[in-house]
Length: 156
Image 1 (cartoon, one colour):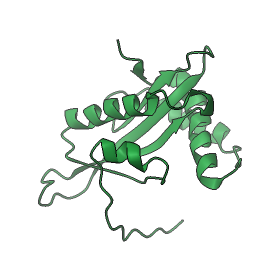
Image 2: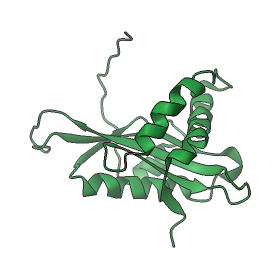
Image 3: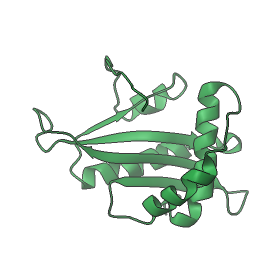
């Protein structure tokens, strides 16, 4: 029996907590979590739409009832097709996080495996993610490769 399950609306607070764990680990310290209250209703709605283009997979914390040990979230995006992706579906993985006291147990790998299967079931043939140096070995072991990234961003 798998430890991994699809996140439900009741998990939203814990999903945000683990997202903050990921954000804080990338920023090397605690960040502002004031945005959680505003984000919570939107996240609950997305978690309540199992047939949509967003999914989060989680593992319940084995020592803390009601808490999550790990989280992986992703979306399916449509982009006009091209060679290798004629239907234009691209998966994007984000918010891969494991509670600090639950690391090194294979939870992130198990969640990633479920998310990748979810992408396959939707016809996604390409999956992108941004990897920290610490997480790169996990992703490489799942078949991800580094690519040159000409990304730019504009905040509106």
